[in-house]
Length: 354
Ligand code: NAD
Image (cartoon, protein in one colour):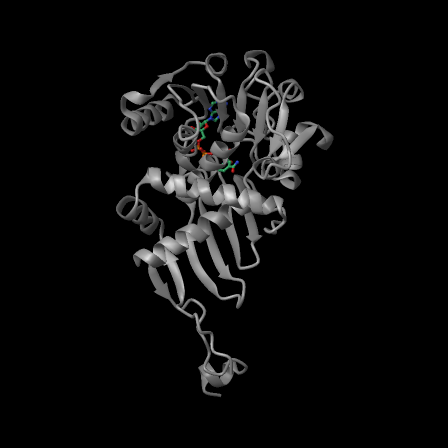
């Protein structure tokens, strides 16, 4: 009989455990920096084909969608279940995006961790934009515009401010209360180091900003939010909100004028901003640029777009990081979600005394 030597059980990490881990055992800044490092490694490993990542499976409902996103680095497998239900905040007091995930031991298939992932999703999406910004934006960029000031937006500003010396943030949301709440938290986070300006139109956000983030949950089929004529030469755009068929945030002529880099090409072509263009117009994925296999920005005047739809590799990397941290700090509940039968080949004998 083979005994599973490393069996510790399955770690259940509730969202509150993750907040506890970040608040009490490290800091949000330090956690984001660690995440940056493991995700940068993840992009490199993906470019070297050391991470397998099939396109996600989507299921569409009247009010939103639910997706299964899986990845493996040969040692671990992860799968995240994540939704987008844009009416959740108003009708149910729930976030638009709710995520949960599982990390599995590749050697045995045993579930190592089940974890809430709503906060982790927002943090890793912010870090993905920060990695893109590091490799694609002009080094002396100092202003950022953020269109859509919901759950994803502050981690975007926080992570991007780690790679560029941002002095001014121009923010816009159709819900002004969301912008006011963003501004208050951002002021608590940055103090006097960064000025936050609530702006009345997406046009004014674009004309003020060296870097633009679009993070809206706009309706499918609605007109794109960012118009080509508003965007100056040299701008870098992280487009994160257009992540489903017929849901795009950037005008096509702006994409045609720009160098397009995607997070994950197989998904971006039908879910991202890139659904508006030919695949041949996509320059590269971010992984190849991080790995030095493809060139980023060509010159200071070029407009670059990071078309981010969400990439399971990012979740795999964040799960491995959080699992290690939680085990080390003894946070979370260890349970036997999958019990180990006494007789591994006879469930009846093990459990039903038959
Ligand atoms: P949210 O509902 O918390 O915030 C979205 C905000 O966009 C809301 O405040 C809403 O008022 C605003 N908005 C809607 N239409 C607008 C418009 N036309 N102009 C300006 N603001 C507008 O949602 P969230 O969790 O912040 O997610 C935002 C988007 O990011 C979603 O579409 C989600 O699918 C996407 N997302 C992408 C990734 C990724 O990896 N690329 C990850 C997570 C979420």
